[in-house]
Image (cartoon, rainbow, N blue to C red):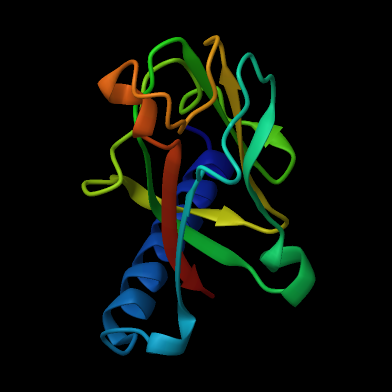
Length: 157
């Protein structure tokens, strides 16, 4: 290891120590006004249509509108067969969370190990690859009355 590498390592160590000090002196807890909890569901009057592609269940642009950073702590969705859930943060598709299976759930959301910084938006688009809208009141299947549903929460920074 040469002198330049040693100096870089010392600076990294100092940065890490200073971050730990800052975290330790931060006040405990957050203001309730900074909490954001959004829960959205399709309804009988506004269902996700049959065979819909990229149906917007969530289109949340508050970080951009407020000019503030949002820290996303967790999210969850329901589970519908033959569906695809596409999460988009700040205009980037998050493939690690998107797919045919739910992430977390409405009542037990997935909690990120560290909050995700959101500057612009959070969107969730649904592909309903079924021949019926959800929810619907046909009564043919028990799942007909179940809406598409999603939740996310976090804090303003």
